Length: 144
Ligand code: RB5
Figure 1 (tube, protein in one colour):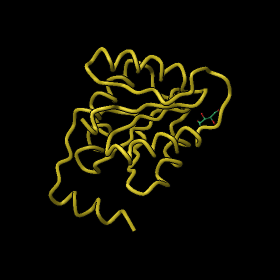
Figure 2 (cartoon, helix red, strand yellow):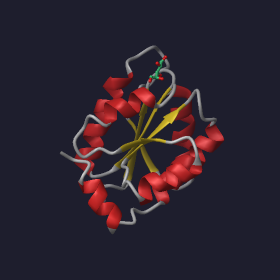
Figure 3 (cartoon, protein in one colour):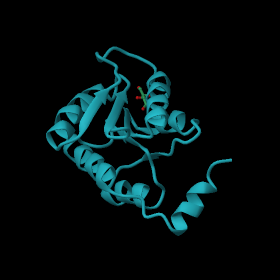
Figure 4 (cartoon, helix red, strand yellow):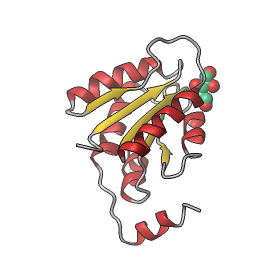
């Protein structure tokens, strides 16, 4: 079904966490599609951010982007129309970015957030529904 797959991508700094999350989130019941990279050699995070956002937009789906801080990935992702990327470092933000902002891309910093917390943040992001209502009006105002 469209939207069921969780896309994930990283740069070299996020590679190890991406590999760990692919395994952990699959074990938690999510269907993961790894959009790379396939090795930890140095690479440019916007390339992977743009590729993932194209898939999320086409699939009306959800994605996870990981770099060292999560910042560069978030900047690149939010250049895409229809993409609402949120950099999260705690559980409140991971829940609120879905409930209030209808975020469709979660950004994580592998040099900031340890793997067990990252997996919990990702699961919260993936299981929390958008609340709609007043939040839908505000989210609609984001797009120009
Ligand atoms: C790579 O060293 C680092 O700059 C990158 O992973 C990311 O943190 C950029 O925002």
